[in-house]
Length: 179
Image (cartoon, helix red, strand yellow):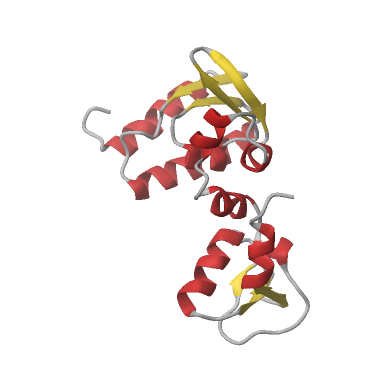
């Protein structure tokens, strides 16, 4: 393994840990030393493995993007105390205190909330011009595409390529605000 790249070494380490078929896997900053492309792939691989084997993974990270993307639940700690334990959407929408609010980042919160939802969940009736975005894309990615192209709406397609409606800037902005 010492001859492998960092990302490949990381995969070997995870494979070794999973070979023992543990009920719980503790990972401390497992993706910190990886470049962004390999990091994203390694995160997706871990999520797929976790889903397939049902292993409980406790992931220690200081990266809120990573915690929100990877976690079903997040425990925010400070000085050895749990300040908030909740689903990512709850932590983003209703931080328990100022520390948690600072950690989740007030200017990033709307975008992080949108990263939790799929485009298909924000579909509105009607049509729109241009290339359709997959329903599996995140609402955050849909908003980025809308802003990048300067369009008010995008068509949305299902997994079979069938158009299922549209997604709009206006609709996504409403969803980016906590209820």
